[in-house]
Image 1 (cartoon, one colour):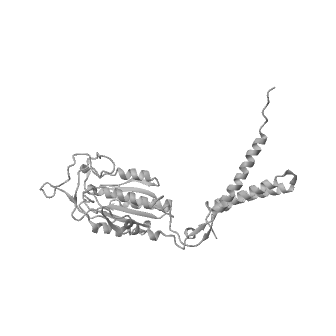
Image 2 (tube, helix red, strand yellow):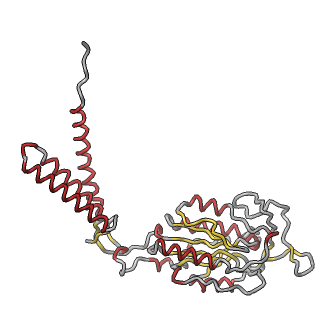
Image 3 (cartoon, rainbow, N blue to C red):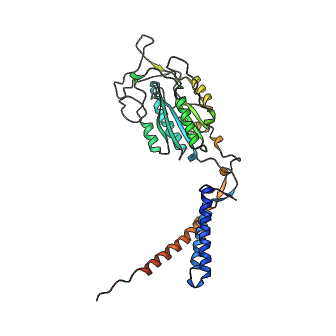
Amino acid sequence: MTLQPIMPWWLLAPILALAVLFLGWRVVRSARNPSSGHLRGWLFRSALVLLLVAAALRPGIAGGSAQRASADLNVFFVVDTTSSIVAEDYGNGSPRLKGVRQDIRAIAQELPGARFSVLTFDSDAVVRMPLTTDTTALDTMVSVLEPQVTAYSKGSSVTIAGKLLAERLAAARTGHPERPRLVYYLGDGEQTSGKAPEPLKVDAALIDGGAVLGYGTPGGGRMKESTGRGPGPDSGEDAGSGSYIQDRTSGGGRDALSVIDEGRLRGIAADLGVPYVHRSAGDPVAPMMQQARAGELQRTPDDPSLGGRTELYWIFAAASFLLGLRETFLLVRHGRLLRPPSRGRT
């Protein structure tokens, strides 16, 4: 049998000692004065408290195996919000952003109870949402994601979020070192800053799993200009003129095309120590999860608090509930006996 107390031992032990001492004193005092008739009552109360203490110790029978609950996870989404994320080569001519939104929601649904954070990057990297278990907030954030305003775009690096990601991961480890940290990088790998991207510089020890998810096709897709006046959640399009970004390098006035760079995405995956997964419309959720090293997050034999076990605390909790009902009944009856009699009419 193993114990997994609901509180640290340093806090639980003094509470247990004080409860035992007080109850022992009351039982001994009642036993010395049997005429008071209080001994039986204090024995029942002592049993109630001891059962609650036993339930708080969370006894269980060790055996089997168990996987770490998703509620123990911190999940970071690093999302590309450059103009190329709305290139229209996802599914039947939809913007890539549509796939990004769908996949974030699908991952969140597969990890109920986890804490989620959203970081976006274009000309700069920003924390759009700190770690939270509020999936409604996550859904709202994903719904309003839009690309950078085209007029403000001056070129971007696919690794510009590295420093910010490293800071957030380090803070998460400091605050809750027991929680594994997953990183999902969602983008197309297109580098538009005019120079080779710098390494991400993220300590692999800070990342316990995740994946780099790639969007786009080798043939590329056109991108509509973004004016910052989005038409609403989940459209992935802009409410401006609807004109497409022009390729100013050719001098021919043609629509610019954004092409996925899977080689660069695989390099980012190698830097993060996670697999690369290309995403197309209709792809199942399983590859994002199965290739995200989820199996490596299983509880290990070296951690006794994470082994498989059959919980027994509910037996003691149920017994204490029954004794609690008895005490409640006695208190109500005693209160009625102490109530002064109503005065009759004279």
